Length: 97
Length: 488
Image (cartoon, rainbow over all chains, first blue to last red):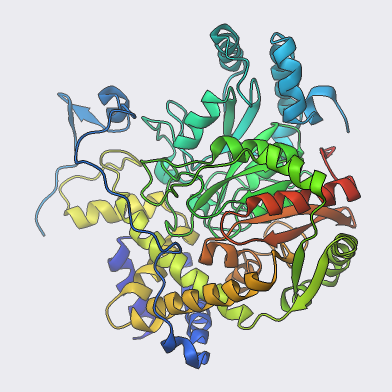
C-alpha cells in the first residue's frame, strides 16, 4: 500500500482525520515505526512460543449475575456528562449515508 | 530546602496529626502556600481543589473520629486518568476536558477510607501516551530541578508535584514505565506493582493488559505505606489478584532487621546502552549495594525487540480501548447536524485527540487488521511469552534484576518528542516489567550535573517486599530522601 493510501485507510479504521501538517509528520514517522516493529522478524525461534495475551495464568473469576450495590451510581451524576433533553441523552441529528 | 510540613514524610505527619488533629489545617495551608509559589513555574496539576474545600474535608475527617487511618490527614496528588467522583478527570485530553466521573476509582475509595485527602489531579501525557508529559493537551509540566527540562512521563505531574513540595504522596499509573520514568527524572521513589495487585477499576484504560496504578513518594517508608493502602483484591476488576496483601511497612521493618542477603542480577546490556552519565551514577550506587548483597552480571538478548513488542501490544490495546470515545454520553461535544454517524464520530475524535494519540490508535488498528495481525500483533505476543520464560529462568537464580531506570538524563523540552523511535527506545528498561506483569521500583541514587538518576529493580510477581527492602537500604546509604527542589 502506498503511504498516502495507508494513512487514509488508517483514518477510516479509527475514525480520525490528520491535519495537513500531521499528515506530513505521520508519513515520515510511519515507515520508521513499522520497520522498527518488523525487527521482530529477526528472531527465528518466535514460532516456538504461544502468544501470551494475559500475564497471569489464572481463570477470570465469575459471580452470580445479580447487580452489585457496592458502587452506587447516581443517575444525576452519570447524566451530568451528557446533553439532555426531557431527561434523555440528546444525540446529534444524523442522516443515512 | 526544608520546611516542617512541606518535606515531612507522611508516616511522621500521621503520628503528629493523631495527637493533634487541628495541625492538619496548618499543614494544608503550608502546602497551598507552597503551591501558590511554585505551581505557576512547574505546572504539575491540571485541577487543584480549592483550599476552602480541602479545609472542609479536614473538618469532616476530624469529626468522623477515625484517627487510626494509616494516611490520616495526608494530602495526595492523583494522576488525572484515575476517576474521582465530582472532580474533573481529563486524561490531559480535550476529549475529556469537562468530564466529571460519577464514581470513585477503587484506589480513591481506599485512600479516603485510610483518611487521605485528594488535593488535585496531576498533569500527564494525553491518555498516558508519552514519556515526557509533553503530549498533554493543556501544557507541559516542568522538571522542578531544572525548569528547561521534562519531568518524565507519563505520570510527570505526580512526580513533579512531590519534588516541588506540592503534595506529600502521589498516585500514578504505569503501562510501560510511566511511574518509574518520572520518579527517576525527579529523584522520587516510584513503584509499579505486580499486575493485578492494585485494582484498575476507575483507571481510564490505555493498554489494559499492562496498566497498573502505583505509588510515588519521597522516601521508601511512605511508598510502602501508600502501597499497603491501595493494594488488594477488588471484585470490580476481573484481573485483580485474589491474594491477601501484607502490611508492606511491617514487612520492610522485618527485612531491614534480618539484613537478608539477596542475589541481584545486573543486566549488562541495559547498563551499556545507557548514557555514560547515567552509568557512572547508577554504577556507583549499585557497587555500594553489592558490597552487602551477592551481585552478578547477566546478559539479556533482544533488548531492542522488547521495545518493539511493547509498542505493538500497547498500541493495539489502545486502539480498542479508545474506540469508546464518541462524544455522545460523555466527552467532547461537537455541533454537527445532518451528517452520517461516521462523520459525527470522526469529527468528535479528530477534535478531541492530539497527534500522538491519533497516531498510536491508527497504528494499533493497523497491527490488528486483517493480513497484518499475525505479522505484528501475534508475533509481539509470542515474544512476550519468550520474554516471560527468559525472566522465569533469571528469577530461578536471582531475587532481583537491576538496571538504570532510564538510559538518559531528563531531556530538555522538545528534545525527545521530536524523534519517535528515540523516545520509544528510552523506555527499554522499564517496559519489561509491564510486558510480563512483574513489579519494579525506581530509587533515586544520585545527581549528574544537578540532574537526578534512578536505579531500577525488578522482582518476581508479588515480591514487592524485596524491592522496598533494597530501596530502603539505598536510601539509608545515600541519604537521598525527602528531597524538595528549590524551583527557581
